[in-house]
Length: 506
Ligand code: GDG
Image 1 (cartoon, helix red, strand yellow):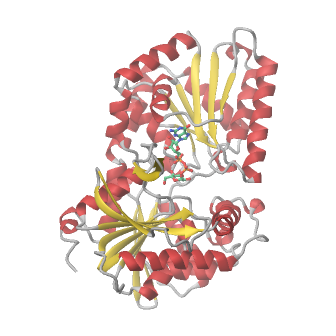
Image 2 (cartoon, protein in one colour; image 1 turned 120 degrees about the vertical axis):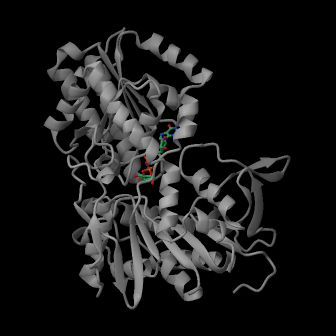
Image 3 (tube, rainbow, N blue to C red; image 1 turned 30 degrees about the vertical axis):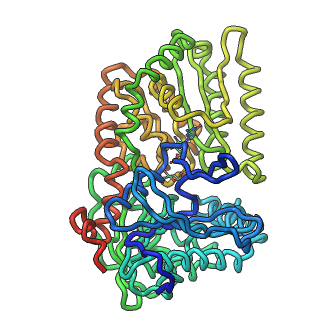
């Protein structure tokens, strides 16, 4: 246990990103709310209100981690209460090695099934271990006796194992935001056993959907003596049979070396209340009227996602070009807005995709456009979320076609925004959300035929069918919202809402 006098926390969230933005005002650093209201940061923070004391562990870029003025732990007070934020000072070299190289060039392609993009050569595994150890130490220093430590995502894969050694008393839950591949793909990673052993030090390992749970089990079984007898039938709301990711049963527990690890399939949802309020606001109504006036009778197709090979942007533009070529009747009648924002703009793999998207957009507009009509609008800068909601409201079709996606929140944001009950969602069978939203028009982004016919189907759909499908989708997105997800994770730790209130007792 730590020796200084700081109050320890009953809930410690370990997430690589900080829960606020640092803003310099008159030479002093102030901590402001994150500008982006979407995403899970506010939801995670909302859990602090249920525990006596909360802490967050994240990394902070630092040129000089040893600088005596560096404040390692700051106390933040905001709408979510007062909590500690423990910042790990990482040098630019550590960030590159741990995050940009190991996490993004080695892990990311494997998690999404792109073996051919896996780049192991530049990985410095000792830096990955060192950074994960630092996260584990920081979490151990913040945690009260018996605290819950909630760790997020693959870039912190080794944290549970280290933390269990440092603090055998804490409850550890780990959530994967990405897909988890089966043994054939996962085992490409040379550090596979070390990663799995670390995850098996958790009390709960969470995934979005049953397929990823079963894949994890297949990887664990391939390398370790695990007992995986306990399984149950997949709940109907997680088992859309038309999705390529459906499963009939799911393993719920795994026993390893005398410990039991619960496996939880809980799909992340969106903050429906927040999005609906935005969708119904005056500001959105004004923007919507402006968009509709510009669109005239043309049907608007909207696509939103990060610039990443997993998101299927290239395949989508190829389909759009084929449709305009093979269906001249569509020309001048539709417009595609493709919002594709780079999160890791300086990585070569992402730069290449951006260049390809720009060149395809130029070709499509050059081939089919006219003075009056631009077939494709490519937006590469981030759009404010409020504006995005107005476009969700305006879009006749949301065309969401990732090749692989843990969940995909954009499709849920689209449904949440459609307070008018209209709009068609075309959704890749390889997005985790496809196992939930059974009334989306399914599409297989690996098939030209499926991509083209799904969009044609969506454009031709009559109003009754559109509204019928959207109603079911909206009901589901509302029920399985972001709070539902977080509660589910806590339930897996045997911390229902009542128990959480008492979670402060050591
Ligand atoms: C990972 C997993 C999983 C996008 N463009 C703009 C913008 N966005 C926002 C969307 C949405 C978010 O970014 C993207 O969420 P996704 O879920 O689609 O994707 P990832 O970033 O890859 O997230 C994913 C997720 O974790 C949660 O577990 O679903 O599978 O890969 O919220 O709205 N937001 C704004 N402007 C933009 O231009 N404001």
